[in-house]
Image: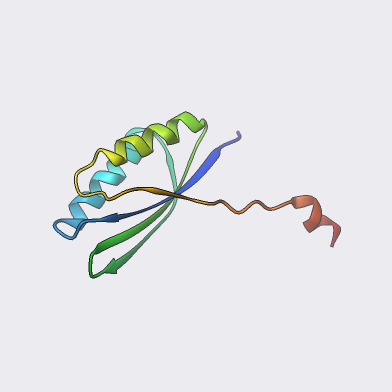
Length: 93
């Protein structure tokens, strides 16, 4: 089954970062999205979060981003570029 993959990066305000991160994971779970990776980094301004998500359709990931945007405590969400690997080049070497 082909999946679409997106990587998002955003900051969580320092008021209640763990509760906000739990809300993020609830959105992902409710939409039945595969969580491929999650990385958090504490900063003086809150918590920086990087997530890589996969879903069978791109629209589900778009809906996820919209719902994350509506959560209280989430600062602007940025989509990270994805690395494209050409398997034909890998096989030639």
